[in-house]
Structures are given as structure tokens and as C-alpha cells.
Length: 218
Image (cartoon, rainbow, N blue to C red; front, side, top):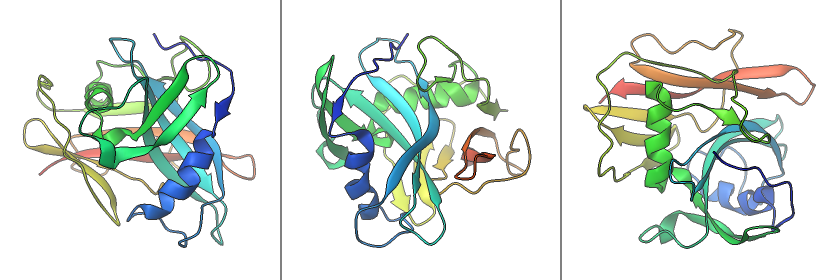
């Protein structure tokens, strides 16, 4: 169970992301730093209790219309070997000390728990409250049980988002730019083998919902 510490972060998460996001191929804004707010998301628990896992929704208001991005992050107490290219930055946590922040799609701990969430074996947890499930997050899966032993993430990024090869000849497509839909809960595309969906508050106070990621055959 992840314990949520309400403490100081220097720099903050959105400060780190404001310069990292414009370097991504799926970013919709200009080359300057994004103007971000942390809009929502959820957490997953690392079974070993070592790695913080957060699936964040960050809204950029530097564009003509606000753009919501899906940003999976991991927080570690030491560098992740071989993942220098995936480092978003470091920050000082008021309780835990120095933390290394990674694009979680390159972190095997996050990827394993994300696939477990799709399969229904992991529970989405509230972003800011300890030991509280997030019931708004929905998921589905229609395939064989995943074998995650020796999982080594090999994500690719393009203008459409992030694509993670997964077991049984599947690929998990992360929709980095979130497109709100009217359905509650949001439904997976026709033919999808699995999905994860959730919600976040819009700038006008309404509740926005979208499919966050879709599992398809390769």
C-alpha cells in the first residue's frame, strides 16, 4: 500500500513536466514551457513498496484551448539502471529525500502494474488519499492471463501517443492527448482486447471522462 505524504516537493511535479512535455512528439503546444496544472489521475501500488506509481492527468493552458495529457510517472529513491533517457528529472521530497522521476512507460514496475490493472488483478487507487480505491477508473480485458515475468518495456512514441508491446502479441496504446467523451463510463473502441478509462475535472468545473489506454492485437 502506497502512503501519500502531503509535503513539499522542490521542484514540483508540474514544474518538471512543464519543460519535459514540449520534448515529446505527441505534445500539441509550442516549443516553450507548458503552463500546467495537475488535473487528476490515479495511483497504482508497487507490490514491493519501493516505487511510487502515478498516472497523472496534466492540463496545459498555454494552447488556445486547454489540452489534457496522460502522464504515467514513477518515483524512485535511486536511479533506474539503463533508463537515463527516460528521466524526467529529480526533486527533493520533504519526507523521502531525493527522488528520481521517470517516464513510467520505461519503468518495468509501472508497466507490470498497468497491465495487471487492464487484466483486473491490480486496483486503481486514489491519487491523493492513502489506501482508497478510485472507483471512477474502469477497465476491461478479454484475453488470456498475462505472464509478466522478465517484462522489459520497449515503448515507442509518435504523434498518436505511446505504444507498449505487451504479452500474447498485443500492444497497449496510451492516449497521451485525452479526448473527452460523453459516455459514463467511457467505452473501449470496437474490437479492442482491453482498455482503461477515467475522469478528471475540466476547467469549468464539469467532470470530463476519456479512454486512457487501449489494448489491441499487433
